[in-house]
Structure formats: C-alpha cells, structure tokens
Amino acid sequence: MPNTPAEIGPGEFYPVVGVGPHPEPWPTGEQYDPELLANGDRRNVLDHYRYWKVSSIVEDLDAKRHGLQIAIENWQHDLNIGSIVRTANAFNVSGVHIVGKRDWNRRGAMVTDRYLTVHHHPTVSDFADWCKENSLPIIGIDNVDGSKRLEGAQLPEGLEERLDAVLSSYLRTLRSLYADFNAAGLAAEQSGLRAAVVANCVSLRREVRVILPGGEEQVGNAVDIDETGRIVVEVSGEKRAISAGDIVHLRHR
Image (cartoon, rainbow, N blue to C red; front, top):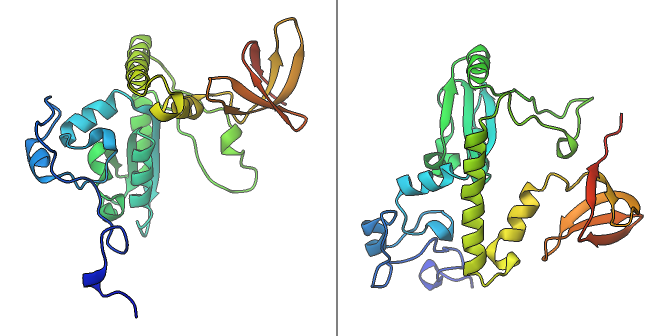
C-alpha cells in the first residue's frame, strides 16, 4: 500500500526548501536579516544569499547584472510571462518589460520579480520610445522562416556605452569571482569560476581560426573551456585544448 501523508518524510513528496534557523553565533553584516537567522530561510534563493535581506540581495545582483533586457507583449493571456520573469531572473538580466496589459501571472514568477525590475509599457510605441531614450536597440525573437539561429547571432551591446560604468561593473564581477576562487582553494570548478567563464566567453559555439605560436593555423569550432582555462576547439572531429595563440572569429557572407 502507498505511504500515507503521515509516513512521508521530507525529500519524498514534501521536499523541504531552504534552511532552518542559523546556529549561534550568527554571522555579522548589514546584509543579514535577524528574523531569517532566527526562524530559518525557506526562500528559493542561491545558497550564497541565505539569510540575506531582499534589499541586500538586489543590491548585490545590481552590481553583476547582464546588460540584456527582455520584453514580451501581453496579448490575450499571460500564462507564460511568469516563467519568462523567472528565467530572466536566473540569468540576472537588467530588467523585464511587459508591453500591453498590466496584469500578468505573478504567481508563475515564484517571487523572483522581487529581485529585478519589471517595467510596464501600455503600447509598443511607448516601449520603443523608452528604448530610444535609454540607448537600447530592440532585437526581435521568433522562429519564423528566415530567422537566424540565436546562438550564432551577433547581438549589439547597446547604442552607447559609458566606459566608467562598464569598467566598474567588470572590476566588481572580477573581485567577486576571485574571492570565491580563493575561498574554494583555487578550484575553478568548485568555485564557479569555470562556469562563469563558459557563460561569458564570446568565442564558444563559434567557428574560429586558431593561430598557434610558430604560425600554425587551424580552423574549427570552439566548444568548451577546460578546468585550467584553456579553450577547447574541435577540428575535424578531434578536440584540442589551446593554451596559447590567437583566436579569430570567422564570419561567412
């Protein structure tokens, strides 16, 4: 006979999310919420943010946000918008724009809308004006005939860049990655450093020409970053880790 609810423990049909009260002594720092430390943190957040105040999490995410922003037109039904907001939060985008009806499926976002900015624009024209004022190009995403594959498309970074803001963001991200790398005993995999490099490497999933020391050239597809930081290029079915050389992105007309 199947288990009755009374016989079912955590992790089976009723998984426990988060962590319980923090053992004393409590960690110090303005980012920590005394109520969460005392009662436990059952929110769906990264372990790094356990027991943090929402405002502190948002402040930390703001320092690391990707320049990408996501827009969706809210037509007759909004069942997918919550999922899009949740996914956008996972990629830490700069914001989500809902065009059209203001009402949307917040339940589907699973509270992730607290951690990023959700804009509303009554019409497409209003959204286009906002993008123009903020120097952001609009890129349409669809699967109609003639569409380009997203993973190989050249997406513009923006119409204008403030170099001081870009450099500050880069240095904050580098400092955070370096701190995690040291804390993990210089282990790139365990610290998340390798994953961060893979996620941000513009050469991956591209056809490249590798110019090796001595002048040797090979053409192949960049497929991975290994645990030592070398780019892995597949040439004629064979994968090769490149530790030194120049990488040139190939463009076919």
